[in-house]
Amino acid sequence: MSKRLSQVSLSLVAGTSRRDVSDEDLAHGLMAGEAWAIGVTWHRFAPMVLTMAERSLGSRSDAEDLAQEVFLSVFQKARNLREPEKLRSFVYSFAVFGLKSELRRRKLRGWLWTFASEALLELGHRSVDVESRDLLRRFYGLLDRLSPRDRLVFSLKELESMTIEEIAEVMTLSISTVKRSLAHASSRLSKWIRSDPGLAEAFDTERWQR
Figure 1 (tube, rainbow, N blue to C red):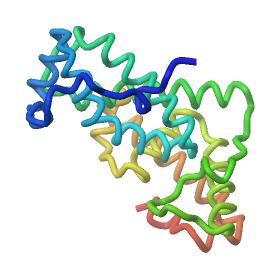
Figure 2 (figure 1 turned 45 degrees about the horizontal axis):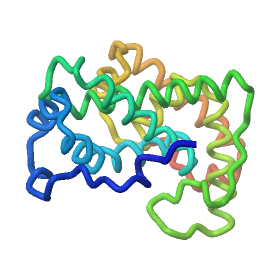
Figure 3 (figure 1 turned 180 degrees about the vertical axis):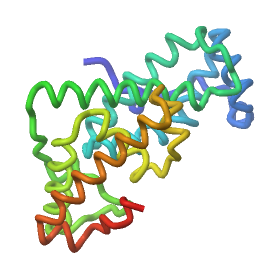
């Protein structure tokens, strides 16, 4: 198995001054095949991709695997970037595509994800008690029951705090489609959560309906 990008020593980065370049200049570096741009792109955007993937999938190891695939695609396709100033959106689009593909694979396998404790979303804390782990396992079990599109729209809105317009852009959907998908996901999750006393106490589902 090839090394994950996060585990590779990024000796390609040519000094900290390179970290201060704008997204547009960084994109031009990638498009030109500049070695320094690879390291800077990873350091700048990997945390964003890893966090989004972990929140959407509920698994750190899966998030790391996805991030590797995302950045390999970004580096390979960088020359196709038509608007260098939109490098962040370019990276986001590959992350969203990867998440959609992974969620679709899970759905097709009919696989209800079972979490190991180290793979659980930590909600910003380094340690999670047993009760919280159980609640998270049950919550992600409900997310697995959604369609891949509904789950991803919900995750981007509620877990990543993205706007409807931003979701529509990165998922290449109309705003009306995003709104319908979000409403459908929120309605179904609210119903399922209300039927589980533990989850009902932990989650404010009324906020999703606003």
